[in-house]
Length: 93
Image (cartoon, rainbow, N blue to C red; front, side):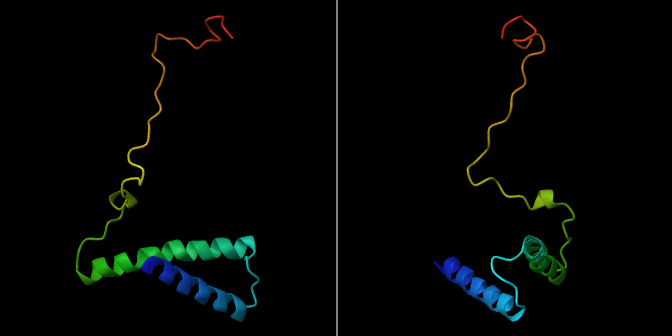
């Protein structure tokens, strides 16, 4: 429940900022994309500050930060065997 209240509060704050900047909502595509970029960059700042504050090494690769998918492992694509030819090459359609 807390995350919904925080989300609503942040949405209200963004709405007030849009109103003060005279930006209509929903925002024009460029404004919205710049805002999303700001969100993505802003998400990286607290962990960076936390690492610097604790004097821990900063991870330079996002691979160390990736969490498992919420639905578990996704299915992998399989390749046909090398000796198995596609149906078109075998004369089938």
